[in-house]
Image (cartoon, rainbow, N blue to C red; front, side, top):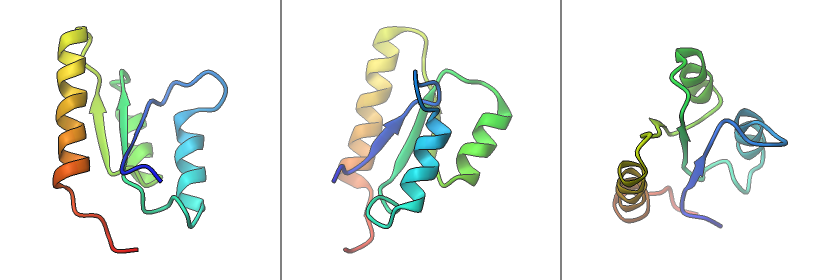
Length: 87
């Protein structure tokens, strides 16, 4: 199982919201931290993400180097620093 899922809301076949709903409904994946990493600046998207069980909501930087740095920092936090529940 992954230590963390970085999820975009705008996916080609299934929305990120649908992926998040399915993850939270499945006992095997419901405790995996999900970081919504998206270009959306809509407050409604942020609220819905948290309502569906997202652990964090991050707006993607437009600049690629800033994006790469943000993903690196997110990875360090969620994989190395965050304490997951046992089991």
